[in-house]
Length: 112
Length: 113
Image 1 (tube, chains in turn red, cyan):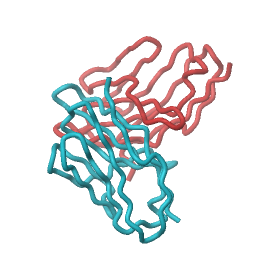
Image 2 (image 1 turned 90 degrees about the horizontal axis):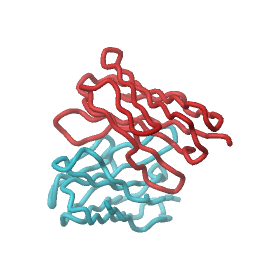
Image 3 (image 1 turned 135 degrees about the vertical axis):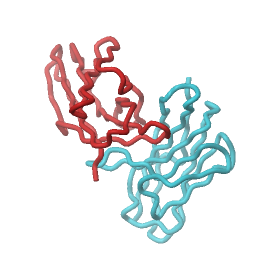
Image 4 (image 1 turned 45 degrees about the horizontal axis):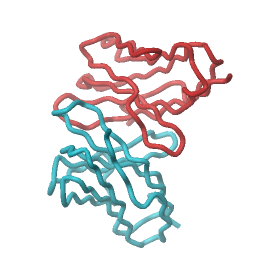
């Protein structure tokens, strides 16, 4: 079963808009949630992450909002740029081990 | 800067053949991972390792073996390749003593005919 789910599968926004990517999970033991960015032909790279003890994490134009009660989180990309066009993966780690469970990804396209 | 390399970058194999995918990391990380990426599934963990000589089963280990002969190297072995193993394979390294990030290699595209 898919323990980490992402929506939408694909998202298109205009340059300058805020893109919102959603993620939900089932396992209450997940305690660390990284978002990875992947460009075509490359491996994923860590973009931003949050621990379950926090409800918000900001890094420049990228912000994670985390709702532990609802088991949901979202990645907001403010002032989207064409260079942000990529696939974004939400992942989750169970406390006590080093394994990540990935969602199926959201393909973001930013139109100039 | 973290460095994970994979070889080969592209591989075409025949059904029933043996395939070995190699990964090397220069980060001196203890942990290494093998994932496969398929459309609609994201990345799924096949095998991982906590250090030289250790291998652990991930979420989808069937049909795969792994080998960690040294801190730097981690191999994924398909003894009898099948078309269902056609995918893009990623290796990653990480060390929780130095943070939770996993560093990924560039991937190997495997096609099994």
